[in-house]
Length: 202
Image (tube, rainbow, N blue to C red; front, top):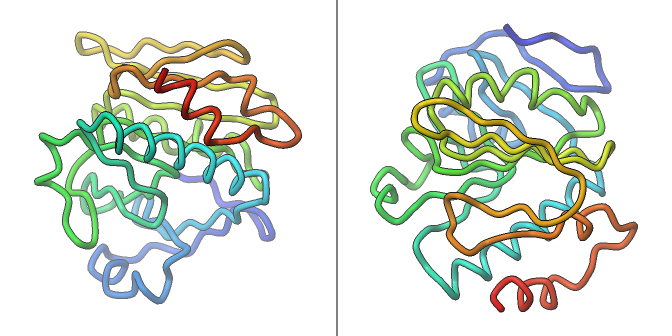
């Protein structure tokens, strides 16, 4: 069950139906559909900077190597008639692209990345992670720039293995060859994305 927080933090609207959510998706594009409710978490400058940095790296890597596509937030991932979360980033392997429609992904992505919000840094961990695990998403990264950590959840032989790191490289299990240096993420000014992408591509 989601926890209601008073404005100006995470905003939650009362329960609505899935049809109503998708009917008004263009009008209420900043809202996610979580557990039958509309939820909005305002994005900070830090959040948007990290989002853009990671999106560029993933798009550039997949353009060069192929095998999957990446989508940013505002593209729902429909898990059931009460849950259509919009992860900050999600990666869908080529073999699962048939589940991508013009409006949403039907079923779970192969890899999702969430970046903690300044409004409620533990929201994704508390509310989204349990549903992502229930959906069987193979790889889940939860970035928390406020304590400079990344939690990685990997589905291995039917159960999740969890690890947390604050420095060094972390490597994706879904996108072979893709890694990031966590020290890049915690700098006051993010490094050149072009230079970082060249390092990743080798």
